[in-house]
Image 1 (spheres, rainbow, N blue to C red):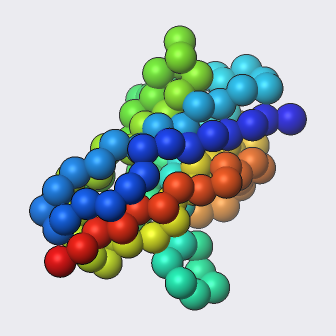
Image 2: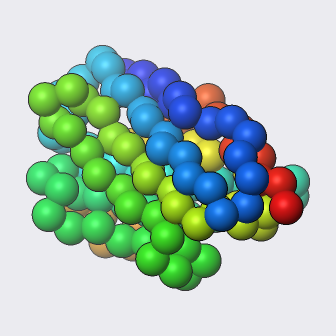
Image 3: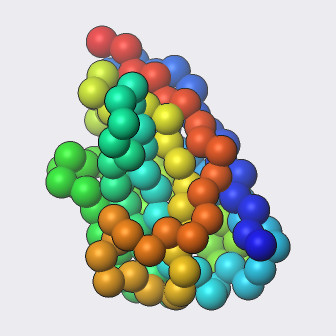
Length: 124
């Protein structure tokens, strides 16, 4: 089993920044590519970003437009999401995700484990 615990969410004004963290325990962190998804009110969970086991390969959703950066620290078993130039439409619950292997083919698929989520609210 893998446990994922997100932190760093909160309320921020448009144009501001937040950094989300996800601490991972339970199995070898390096065994998993990691990612972030988000869900605003509605049925769809949107892909935000993914990073492979070494940090050498990343992918981003189309809505991010270079504003978000995913990174990982394998020594700390933690993955981060730096979010800059936040917009009201970024308001959502952000979920940390662990993929089934150290890499990903389609980052929108292959997630084996989810965190509980952390709420980000961006006001105009």
